[in-house]
Each structure stands twice: as structure tokens, then as C-alpha cells.
Length: 469
Image (cartoon, rainbow, N blue to C red):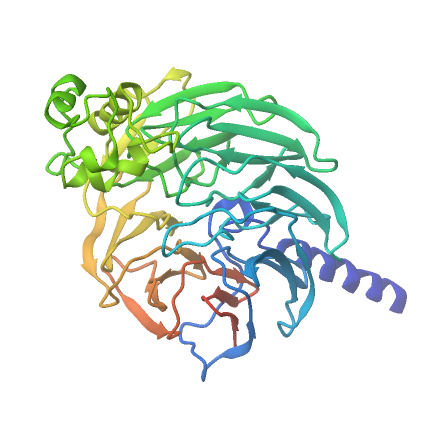
């Protein structure tokens, strides 16, 4: 009887551990849904389990059983590090053999993509090098060098694991592609050309419904669905911003897509005149191409490095016309898609849409059947996921600043984090905005939190915190 009891206890323990993981950006399935009952109030003085110094980086925690993986930039080296989930002490670190660290946005980091794991292999991705696989003890398993993406803001989209493959989306200003690597060996299984897409920073998402899996990739101007087994396209929907930063999410057979960027609102369009007339007015040296100095001051000169797709310091007619078309097609909206489409589903499978008070980088989360978003400045909205009807809209959180971290949820609450480091805890069941607590960590936060077994893990610019009862 004692032996049976011990075996049953071991089985229950292992089952619990198997369910208590955060294996990729935004956790299991990329849904941002945590486990357990995390604290509502926490700080350096309250409900702090531990804190650990970590290198600078914007990647979010990847958690498997008793270990946490992060990436960072330390001493000019891009590193993958593993911490103990028990007390935060560092277990190991490994440097990527990058010859040069890619550039990043002035508030960005070359260590932004979040690691992912299948439980056996830990996958890290740096735009400066490519993909690296380790076991959870830090032993290198394989490496797949990839060319640095052609975008001056750096790499942000995180890899995911699906159908035994590591999926990497490398949308950039020239030569965009998506690649699938065997998670066991790193061998290339398939590659999809996405050269019609420009820079985007959205992490791909696996939409599971009706017994199938769809690989959903949000990009510039449109979102596409692919078969994860072979990379073949299933459908495409227009209605995205010029640059996609947010990641898709879903509630069963309802897929939620979101995107906002400058020039995508009907009352705030960025207009580009025809190339010939623009050249006639601005090509001072009459050489048929445009330098940055030849662009008049304003929104177009501010985006010269974006229009200059190949980064050679000159804008050709092809580059100009491509960006002009993107500005004319860009749409800012949060919208829902129903399943079963093929080809262009823009006019056939959109269930509902909202076009106001949209997040920029913050990815929405679904809790209690509702989609929660926060616009920069701290304006919170919630919508019924099935109908799109507002529960509340553009309500002020009294936690200002930008919101780059994505939302997470657990135990009927939604956790939203400002760049300034204030985590507001919202009641997901209330029909009005109800803020249960505002927790000021007093450090900048760009990484998205993880919630596992009632513990909130938050990465700031300098620390990883674990908050729990």
C-alpha cells in the first residue's frame, strides 16, 4: 500500500509539473494564460519570493519545470542563461558565436526574441546569429546560422515549436522568409518566401480548432495562415497595419488579430504623391534617386530608413512606389476571423472589427470570454470575443506611459504592464474597468510577464522578479 501511495504521489507530482510550464512567448499555446492564483499586490517589499540580477534584454521568461531561460546582452556578448525557478540563482549561460551584434531601436535590445522549448530542447534565436539549441543543462545540441534581418530596429519576433519544428519568421525590408527547422537536428524542413512582406515583429501563433492546426503569421498589410506540416498557404486576410507588432490570439474557433501603426487610421493617413511629381520637386542633383537630404522635412523624411528598403542610402522608384502602396492599404484595427476559409477571406470570414483605441506593441489577452487591450498612455478596453461588443472602451488606468509588454491572465484577473514598470491588475469578470491593484516595480519593463503555479515572473531592465504568496 505504501509503495502504491508513493507511486501515485510521484505520478500526480509529475503530472502537475507537466502542466505548470511557460514554454514560449506568452506561455502555453501563446495565449498568455497562467496557472494558479497569483498575488494581486506585490512589490520589492510585499509578496516577493526572490529577485535576481540579469543582463539587459527584452526577452520574456521561458519556464520548464524548475528552470527559467532568458537571453541578454552582457559584455558585448549575446547570451542564453538558465536560472533556478526555486531561488533565481544562475545555473548556466552560453554565448552565441555572433561575429557582430545587430543594431536595435534606441529603446530596443538585440536580445528580444523569447526562447521556446519542447521540454527536452531549449531554443534561442538571435537576429545577430540565428538559432541555437541546448538541453536544459546547457549542453549545445545544434546551431543554425541565419543572415541578420535587413531592418535597423533589430529582431523581435520569437520562435515557436509546432509539429516537431522550430518556426522562425524573418520579415524584413528585403528578402522576408519563414523557415521550419527540425527541433531535434536543426535541419531545414521547409522554407516559405515572404518577400512581398516588409518589416514586422509579430510572433507566429498556432490556431487550434476543429481538430486542425493553422500557423498564423501577422505581417505588413495582411495576415496569412499556413499548414505547419509543409508551409503551404491556406488563406490570407487584409486589414493589417503597415508594421505588425502584436501577436495573434484565439478563443476556440475565433481568431483575434490586431495591429496599429502610424498612417493606418482614416483620419491620420500618411500621403505620398506620385513618384514623378515628387522627384521633379525634390531630386536636387537630378540623378534619378533620392537621398535623405532631398526628402523635405516631415513624416516621409522621418521614415527614410524604412522607405530605403535595401539600406544603401538611396530611394529608387521601386522602393518609393512600394512604400506608397503600403501607406494606401494600411488599416489599424482589432478584428475577429472565423475558421474554414481559403484564398482571400477578407470579405467572407471577418466576424467583427474595432478601429479605435488600439494597442501598438501590446498583444491582447482573452479572459472570461473577453478581449482585453491597452493603448499607449494607459487606455484600457475590453470586448466580447464572440461579438466584438464593447464591455468598456478607452477607460483610463491611471498608469501612463507606453505599453510594450503583452497582457497575461490568471484566476479571473488580467495583468497589464507599462514601460515605466507599473503592473495594473484588472478584474476580468467586471462589466466596468475595475483595477484591483497597481504595483510599481520602479524599473522599466519591456518583457511580458509569465504566470506559473501562482507565481508572477517579471523581467525588468536589470532584474528578474518572482512574486507569489
